[in-house]
Length: 459
Image 1 (cartoon, rainbow, N blue to C red):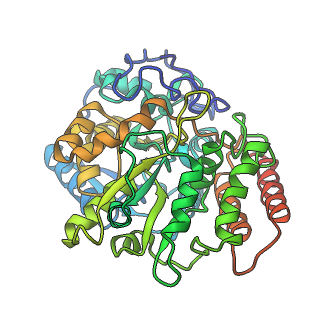
Image 2 (cartoon, helix red, strand yellow):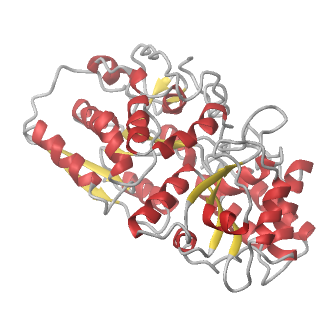
Image 3 (tube, rainbow, N blue to C red):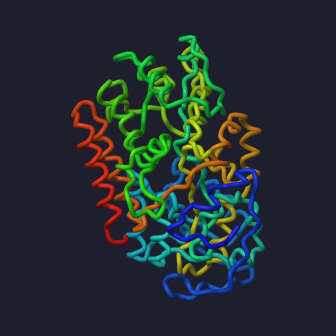
């Protein structure tokens, strides 16, 4: 695997994997010491530090309230006497709100030494170019870290312009599957496709959305309106949301138009999908038998299975299944490969100790508990994934999209918040049956506003 992954080719190449999730890459060679993107010299790797009165701050919105962060902090401090790690949870109303808090904290000189600016939230390159996070190649080399411990496709997300800036945190294929209540299919006498079948057509999904709908009682299908859902909707028909370079909306291309017209018919013309805000908690509604199919991803499938088990739900009311989206003519599977990264703030005085903490949260034990304790989905390490399969064989359902998924396309200007906000806002308007707009008008507004964001100056 080549070390360099450009901003324009986010997830191209190594994320359009040929060896797949089950073949880890060779460890990238560490580049020679170099200046950071902001012009400051990267801290030189040192011998093991004398851990005496060292204080590190960990700022993250990942997993507050689950106990995972506190356990990682406690076990690290027990193993490293003299080091104190202070966990400072970020609790904004949305993930993008929390990035705003981190940028403000950096401007005020108060950003934690351990932080995360995720590529799949389109913040990674922005944080590098603003000299917020530091390259860690020398720290990796000094620690002798075996980078083959993580899968190739998620390791590739950690690089920009030949330098490594983090270790993998979370990773999955995005909204690549319909989370299905099998009880409804069985009750209707409809044979379910195999959990790894790719033969279900979009026409069949639309027919099921209609047939399982019961006014005031049940929705046959729920479709998300956020960016990660809209991009997979367009890809299911062979279209896309934006181009690979992140400079052009693709929403007026024929295949994307076909995808959104498919959703518009179900949502507005036939009025069989939930209007925005009608179902307050789709996951709970599905457990209660009020939603048959929820267009989500592997994490949602796993959570549905967990909630059914935890609630002792009768199988006649809810039973977990999944229906994968159909294979595209080019052989790829509709998906949006997504992943995150743990980073170290530029200028951190004890970067070597901070890197040890990164290993503690991204290593085998930390990654496994990130899944099992905090409820995240991190299919980023072979050992973690095999442990997850051993704990619950349902994880075997999720391999195909990771082996043959489609890269996420990032806005070239790193306008992550504006991009994700505008997609949700104008998809809500397009697919709202309570305040209907003509399809062509709603689609044009969605396209124009997406294009306006990606035409903005770099963040």
